[in-house]
Amino acid sequence: MKSSWKELASVYIGTVVGAGFATGQEIIQFFGVYGYKGIYGIIFATFLFSIMGAIVLYRVFKNKITSYSEYITPLFGRRISKIMELIIISYLFIGYCIMLAGSGAVFEEQFKLPFNMGIYVMAFLCFLTFIFSVEGISFVNKIVVPFLIIGIIVVGSAVILKEGFVFSNFIGVSITKTGNWVTSALLYVSYNSISALVILTSILPILDSEKQAIKGGIFGGLGLGAMAIFILLPILILYTDVFSIEIPMLKIAGFLGQWSRYMYSAILWLAMFTTAIGNGFGCINRLIGSYKKSQIGISAVFCIISIPLAKIGFSSLVSIIYPLFGYLGLFMLVYIIVDEFMYILGISRRNLYKKK
Image (tube, rainbow, N blue to C red; front, top):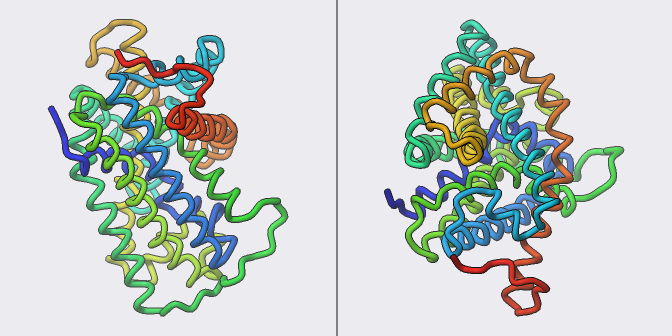
């Protein structure tokens, strides 16, 4: 099945827009603390997301790459790649469990339903998506991502129209950590680059041209940037009311009425779902390549064994696991971009990309 660049962009966006992004927590931590300069940070991050997406999808199509292991092995060498693969597959599995735990939290806290129900519902829907492989991932994101984009823009625009462009946090806040909006944007993109790389290197079956691949990567990055801006602006406007809230965008949506809060709860759950299927599929795709088992069998086992870990809880998993992978993502992001430009300029030290 071939897809348009819009569907490629949707898969890219759906993979990155997870719980931290949609809640607004990541946007506050990486950009909101810098006040109006956080807008510059998001513009820079958008550029990096677009460049990375275009580079990876272009290489995937040109070299007929079918998994992240095929991408990173010639780039980093076999020894380093084996270590990185182990880290990446651990990240994917734990990231998937975090999204399941997040689903349980949304069901319990926002919809007043049992925590376990949220986990089971998401695990079952993920399983249904996994059995259709890349086509299933593409289909879900094609439907869900436009809703996410529209929902976030509607909520953000409503706050802006109601409150005006009066930032309660204009110049930024006093923070103890070192850095600025440039380094923060770089870290934010690298933080999300592992899961993005994994899913982008798995979608060769729906690529049909270099132009389509490049446009999908660029517009995926632009879509992420647009969503981030419409989360950041209401956060800066209402910063003093939401900076200490665990899910600031739900608080912001609540300012517009109960209907808006329920709508944003659905957006948050769907964002978790698209990230869960991206992380889960990347992990399953690698396991199938290693063990040569059926898609349905591995998908079923994967979904079942993830449930007990998800029950540990959303906050506990996020606080322990996510910081461990930031530096790996930064290393990968910088290496991928620098190496591609060296290759284009003809000064690459190795012929990494031999067309198959």
